[in-house]
Length: 166
Image 1 (cartoon, rainbow, N blue to C red):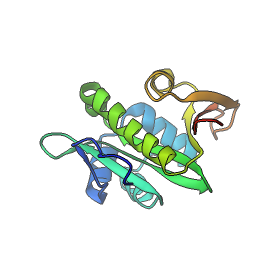
Image 2 (cartoon, rainbow, N blue to C red):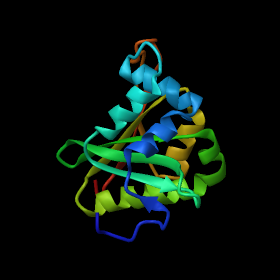
Image 3 (cartoon, rainbow, N blue to C red):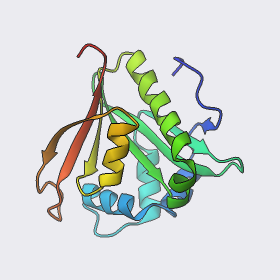
């Protein structure tokens, strides 16, 4: 992406970043990963490999010591439609939520400026703090709920941000 300069601590996503973060993944993210992948249990090695293999744009937000705070990205699932993913640690979110928000908004704004018409994310409906972040900090709108969607019967909510004028 060439739309604007990324935040200074935003670097290309590497395998070791994802391994580091999956080894320290937040409990609510583990729950969502298991629910969405239909895995019998959470294996950080499998999760890290799977995330690295998602096509599309990826970034890592690094701390001053060079260690990853969060990694995320978007995969184009239809022309102009991009689906998000992100992984982080409790410590990363607790200490760096503002930087995470800035980097995420930078990526979203860049995709929209380069022609994306729809950015979407799915979340377990029980993750209320995450949903609040999507709405208040990222400007995403609730689009709908997939009731009893996950293998364990949990509901899944869809949040979207559309290009201007749509």
